[in-house]
Length: 127
Image: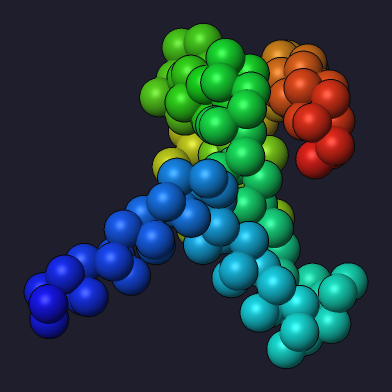
């Protein structure tokens, strides 16, 4: 009976995780907000991780465009550029010419992707 008792909690945990694959990201965000306050800037990364999790789950094509598809002529995605305020280390991945010469074109391309992703997430009450 001992191994079966151990197996039950693992199965329950897998079932709960299957019901909400973003549970870990949500828990981490909630813990951060309890510690730092609901509107704290200290929880920005956690908010973005949770948003990405739900985006990849519920808005697959829009999430792929924003998080994975390289901007034309580069190896970086829009998320790499747009989220540099929360992940300043991303700047090291962005080609210099993209930051200067093509800055407006890149922003316009990314703006549409952000809009499409936000629109999809808002249909799921997650915008």
